[in-house]
Length: 274
Ligand SMILES: Nc1ncnc2c1ncn2[C@@H]1O[C@H](COP(=O)(O)OP(=O)(O)OP(=O)(O)O)[C@@H](O)[C@H]1O
Ligand SMILES: [Mg+2]
Image (tube, rainbow, N blue to C red; front, side):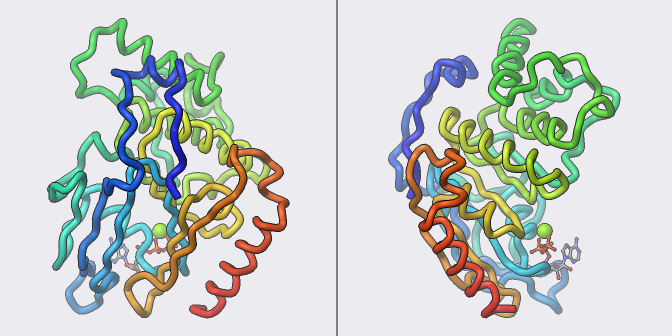
């Protein structure tokens, strides 16, 4: 279930005071969505999915089942052939700053420093230079990139680049962050660190997260809810609510009996759909 978020001092600096929304209020809705890149081969058929404010929801499923497609539809890069995608009850008509996107390739600008890459996130906002500087400073601290502000992407490790990508998408405090296998390309230790940081960030700055991964362990560690998609159904095969002790980022949650039980259940469900 949605975790209550606390508004930390550092996060509060990011923008105006955050008003805690009703925990079960829908932020994103997909209602009977049908989609295919061509009409001959549908990827999603009649898919209905609701993402709640502040929720951490993960999509799991075999390659080609439509995980990235769902993110692209919510981001507004594609339109459904039938059905409706809504944000806050309003139809999604195209990309918006209210929905942040972090993809695997992370797409940093090589000719910009860490600071400049992050500031690019709010290029359309009418803020003074000082306000922008303050926001960049706050988010750099939140993602632990102090000391690297003036570095260029080629001077960073893979994990640090991912942090910059996350920071850039979060400076505008999107109401939902869409993350498509953001940590797939980094080594296991770095990945675990990034997962823990993401959970802390999620607690502090609120907003929902829709996450895609192939890793069952990653899904269990991070999520309030896990949705398994089936390629043949073109939709949802199973939903699991994850309840583990708070704070969720505690490393003990990776080795507990409860964690192992979720992992086994999900493994068997994934096996069942092949
Ligand atoms: N731009 C595109 N043009 C045509 N077909 C596409 C396009 N993008 C995806 N597809 C097809 O749509 C289906 C779903 O793709 P999608 O990328 O959403 O899957 P996925 O679940 O994200 O897979 P993976 O786990 O491999 O990333 C696949 O059959 C894929 O080949
Ligand atoms: Mg994908």
